[in-house]
Image (cartoon, rainbow, N blue to C red; front, side):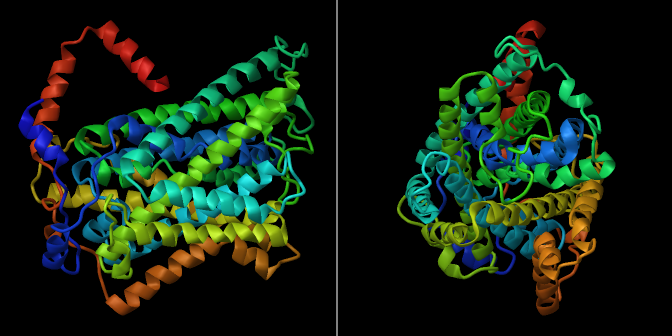
Length: 537
């Protein structure tokens, strides 16, 4: 790589705010986010942000609701949605690497009101997500200690998240990298041990596929059983889009973002689908210890599998690992929400206070405000961890789906405007495949799940509280969008008015394409081995 490329990639990216380009660029001369995240940081952050409460705890409820087959199918369908979202986001974020990219992309290429909406929805998604992870921490600690109020554990974890996020982003990336490495290792060990337990190699009992032939079969709830798992699966995958947030602090986003997009998908689907399969094979969906309702969150299904392996100490170890992973997921939530709030403030959608950065290039006030939302976890001491856990899971799951749908809508407008201006796709660092079919899949499936996930609240007896709880994310998004539309009178951005120049690092694109030419000279067998290794390593 040339020295010029190094200088370019380390230069702070400047991008315009829709309301005041001059003032924003002037302020950027004085402050900027540090591009301290390397490729390995971004890949692990994207992966680590998803492996947390959703997989380790909510997966039990998925098996109980949809049965082993229903849960597996639901996770595979949502996995397809994740693939489509990642491809679309990767194209935009690699071309225009900006922190808090979702709101900026929607404002620039679709509709300012849509940008305002997705910005605040995504901030709420991860700010409340911090509370979800802290709630999970209280649940896990109660496995060992019941005498201490859950508020104590909430406060300790909240202070830890603040401490991690107020210093250098490189330090944050390094911490998240190693914690995520532990997560991946544990999931791989779990899959191996679970398969050994299922075949009788460990534990002496050959379960085989017997749990798929219980009363009701693999799909005891039929289509509705599968549909009921969609929201839980969406919550489990929530966070894959963090790649779009980290692009603004990546050393070489044109190269690292496409690599992270393509690799993270295979890893996540591999880990999640196999984990659900193992749980379904080993633990019957009728087991009362699974998360059948919000009042009985006792232990993780991962712990139950290790217990069946006969390793009592492993259950304690697994709970300790789950505790670490939840703190990590909360860490990713604090990072994502703070960068999103920073972007909103830069565009004039939030108080300018949140644009202030400390000497390490961290948006300190945005971090503190986002972590303050973690105080919602204190509700666990009043209503019980299980109930609040279910409420917050519903809120963050729907918000995540809304974000995915808006990303896909924005990508359609991005591609339409890009081509309408006579630009070539070959100039993009990464081109999303199967356009526009991937975006259509996300919009259709996402919309169906968003509007249909609360159908049970309309069954007799109807409770207004349950209806609101089921659609609180959709209600919030609608109010924010309509409110902004009324006051701003904004309309759809026309193709000719879209700005595809400000905020890009064009000079690095050609260097990357030179690298691709060099890769073509590598023998096929070496490339195949390297590709296979990259999925796991």
